[in-house]
Length: 321
Image (tube, rainbow, N blue to C red; front, side, top):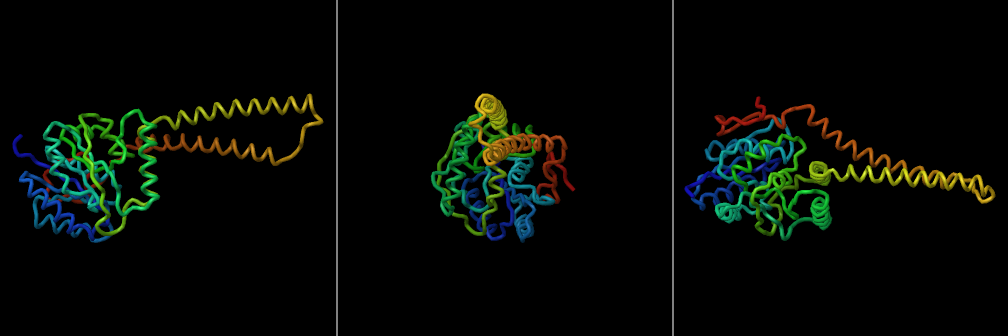
């Protein structure tokens, strides 16, 4: 294969402390490859100096591109924007915190050249993370795999290389509540893993606190599985049958064995709270799916771009101001 163009997609949110080192390591790796490349930084509405620092990089290095969001639209949307505007024959998605090593990119490209369309990084260890985060992540990936009908690899994040044709396929998927690694499994193509040890964050704080992790987990489950809805239907049927049998038992006891009937509110309240709790749980599950339908029905742009740097001539599918 002749020389290629490799697009490196790097979402950034309040990462001023890591930008110089991220740029240095990425540039070093790509220069040693002796291939054409571009580094696309997506500023996801940062409130620190991330935007100005990336603008300076664009001035000194034309291979650095900037997509500057009008506000914070989220990590998964930032990855999508990078893919929308990338011009490469292949694209590498990597976070800017250097937990995923840029030094794996040459090996990913080598595997891609051998015929694979997606090469995803699989974590064999996670340094610098709490036991709670490691445990919940491990449980979630396996729980999601059991729920879905597609094979979403466990212990993988968004760090991966994808072929141009995979990118074009993903552009046909307009859904708003995006779980990108799940979408990449859904589109298919030839995929393989490359194992690595995930390092501790180079600097700064994680941009995925518990609240965002729960949102991402919900996106993954709701976007790729109807089983929670089926569970709600199943629980509803079981509870209806149990309630009917309990009603029969109460009537029989009251009619035929009135002397054994025990009056009291405790049991009634307990049963009522239990069934009401189950009903509210089912309504919550249904409401989550309805909320996603509402989001899709509004038809708003997935993101809005305030500024493009070193790629003003490119036409992306989203709205710019």
